Image (cartoon, rainbow, N blue to C red; front, side):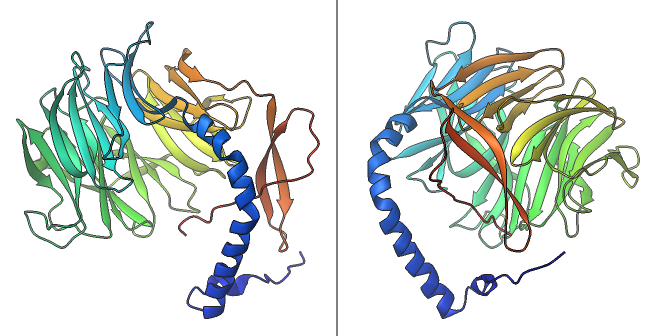
Length: 414
């Protein structure tokens, strides 16, 4: 195959003054070019962005709780037949509050709502009584990944940014804390500091703690133990130069996604009785495994194929059992799961959101918002100078001929 020289390779040296000059000049040129277009579509975009959008959702014994944003207010609903009355409303106000995620207790009597202030990471979380919509407590700071142990006690991750954690160490530093009766206590993560990050979740059976400790963006380790006993939390599996994250604990076995090999992701199983024995449950495919959940002894996977989500089902032995395809390419975001079903959002260029509950037997549409527009989305490919095929989506009015195109991209972290 004939290879051509990359004429833009010199731009990768960000310490080169010529690169800085090039970037600034092209930035100014682009601003001038797009400014008239920006002004023309500003009001149109404001009207679109002011409409209702789904941000987060959770499964509880009471039903599905969902967090929405509409213009400058956020509200939480319990999704039943009557969707007309929000149970909690939060206005952005002078503090420029941005609601982020919803974490409901298993029974659904209370929920936590995380938020940031003025677009910064700093903010906190409100603990809210579902029946009254009353804020019963507030946790301030950078907090996330709430795991309820009942209606009065919960775990979460706190990131110390400006002040050192009470157990010492440099900042920024992550710690897992417990909140009970209005008091916070650090229970895990002593000694960890940047570039380490922590996430925690409960297994679907709510008996195990599944913790991921990230060392930067390229490697991580999984710790596990009894959910209600932090003293039992221990390292289960670590990737020295690759990422690994937990899926669930089922039938006395831990299931994890390991991004070793080519980095696309495979599912491995580790017995609770013999943690040194690691077996491949689902081999690595040619597409990136973004997420996975286990429902009714079936693995539901979300793969990224040509920049769109594809849901596939496999047995615990790795045999394919089915697939969910969407007519229009889009993105799936898994919000929550139990042993019985999974809750996820589907969105694309034409559909703001559709919220589904899937239990293997039925895919139930719980809520959606659609736009009355006569457009189509199709896959297309371009070939770069060095022969690399580049995927793209073409969004256009049905029957329209393309004369102009807006091309944009994002380079990512690596």
